Amino acid sequence: MTALLDVSELHVALGRGRKRTEILHGVDLTVAPGEIVGLIGETGSGKTTLARAVLGLVQAQSGTVAIDGREISGLRGGALRAFRRSGAVQYIFQDPLRSLDPERTVFDSLVEGLVVRGGRGRAELQDAAQGVAQLVSLPLDLLSRHPGELSGGQRQRVVIARAIAVDPRLLICDEPVSALDASTRITILELLLRLRESGDVGVLLITHDLGSLGGVADRVVVLYQGQVVETGTTDEIFLAPRHPYTRLLVMSVPSIQDEEPPDPELRRALRDELRSLTANSAQAATRH
Image (cartoon, one colour):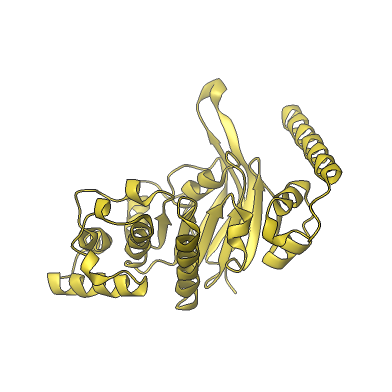
């Protein structure tokens, strides 16, 4: 199957002059149509930078990003703006309240992308808004309300509905459930599953919480200090992690631990191994 998203040997650096720092070091990642791929990593590992590179918001030093076989990492100017207007890739932010205009009603937010494209009358926009609202189980009487009048879970549904209103090929979800309570978190993750199963959309689910990927992601990519250190099916990552960072992540999730608590000595040994690997990588980078 041809990859929907294909990131190959991606290097990204941010800053200028002496403060310029390489954030991503040769990242490879794919998402197939109808697949949910979890991208896990600690704060500062480069997860959001990778998402921004896919969206064309930051330029890569080298490497490629392709959507449906079309390389988009080299797009500039009008070509890049046209790609963004196409809606092929949609970004779902961690904080829905900050990503929604407080002065716009839910209806206006849902049809914003369609209005930008043009060619639809008020009745068609109304039908489209009601359609995506029903798809994400958002009550239709909320369409006339403003973001400040909604709960956190309702706002996140609005953000997801707005993203899918333009029929995207790829959804990038950046920590979409980290600020929600447990029951709402489950509801939103189930919604992503339904979206995946209803069409050929692919989902890149970014998180620092490995536990939130269980039962949702088809594959997991582990990002550590700007490098992919492990990738595999969810079962492979949960049941047989290889890299010390991944093993520490798995040990921190109570639901996938053994009945016996993790051995403190093993934790220390893994942390020591991780520190050693990090030091060796830093020395190698200095030599180059």
